[in-house]
Image (cartoon, rainbow, N blue to C red; front, side, top):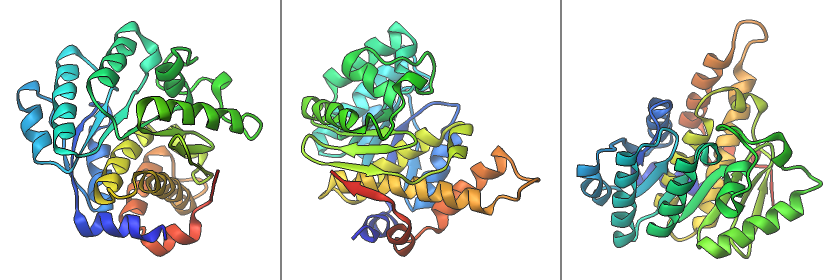
Length: 274
């Protein structure tokens, strides 16, 4: 069942327009190439509509936001909406400043998003304006645990009903849901939180999976999250005990995405559907 999602990405080779943050742009491009997609990273307002028009999907990442980039995001998102192509929002650090909060609100008003992916603090800020993080990482107080999992799922489902988007909450436990159905995913490794860009890479990967599997956005999103988590596990398994560190892990992570196939995805996926 799951294998078709990664197989379709490799067969279709969707072109993904990423207006992303310059801290992780190279990794975003490489993760898309690794999964079989084709990246275009263009953030000029003057060409945003043209680039979105030739792409299969759009990923909007708020990591290094500025007014010009925000205008480009709105233009690219609206053009993708006109063409019926998926648009993914990654609200990086949205709780950090009034500018980011106001920009996220504008994006949600102006663009119809297919999926929204962030950590729990970012999603809470979007939905409730109450996320606890002061930077790009989730606040410890917002952490998703087995104990609060039912309430977090219910919250995410309500936000999905409000936005019409698949909501993806990344963390030790990942939640991927619509208003009616949720995947709870337990793949991944703690080392993923020690490199810059694992979330940005996942958002781009999700855009590729949805673009190649438009008939089932929820399951395609869940498969992208599982793929990233499984590849994080595989990357850690390759590391030597004493010699390898975070830079090596980052390289192994991209290698793992290059090499994963449908059988691996089926065999290693750890999830339940609620």
